[in-house]
Image (cartoon, rainbow, N blue to C red):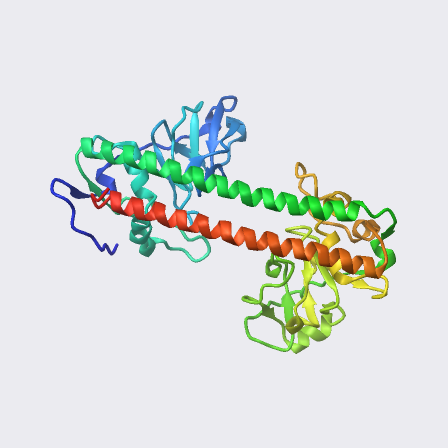
Length: 405
């Protein structure tokens, strides 16, 4: 582990994390089948605020095999798998029989450090830089507990640690509160845009089914035994993984197929005049195909909507409708309690679209696009402010552990 250390103030010393924490034991909740446990996994930790937000209550008989790490009040849990290396939290609440996933390293402060001091330190970029060389594994990149504990920590006296923690508590709480308010503003703006979009379509009373306005066609999987390639050919193959949240295709990692494979599935292509929609995996993502992918092959996990009469239905109008709550409800996407494995083409075909004249459709699109542009610009300003505050947090933490706070 390569360390680029800095000079410490008088009385401070460098120690390995292993020297500042106690050993912890693993558990086996499955042995206590009817005991109620509080299970904390990677999704339970808010990586932006370094807090535990969604612990899960489970019976021992229902415990996942990864539920083994014993934790207690004031432990620091540090996720050891990429991309979750910033999922870090201080256990601030007393949970009933808490147990964490083996995806965490449990850091329990000994007499050398205060738990809060240890917690703040391991959230720093300095720690991330130290452990990066030890993150290994091609399919499941991770760092072992032992290698994580090789990271060096600067340790001053307990009194100095208390002073630093009090300062950080005060400063970072104020910054986190400001960030939270900015994020709430972003959420509000998105909600207002969604409300405006839903309202525009709700005001239209006439309706027609998707199948009466478009041809609904599915994509095609590769022939058995064939694989996608990074080698550029004349035949790109669009996957659901390439669909963005912005209504188009991410061109950064497009895969390709050979001419021979294309000949076998050449009927299943999509044009720049069609709308795509994901029907398996991440369901309901819709958007346009950029000109450079006109005629690309389309995955079996997506469908295309081919407009029958462009004088009757505008493509952008159709796309905006797929973003409405009405579309989500008809497609069965509004209910999140039951996982929907696939959106059937028959169901997609029967969805009803509010219909007006082509001129009115284009006016609606213009209105919504103008509102989207204003909302986007406002969000960019807010995100820039959040980024500045995050940088300020990093700077304060950096100063704190150099004795400059």
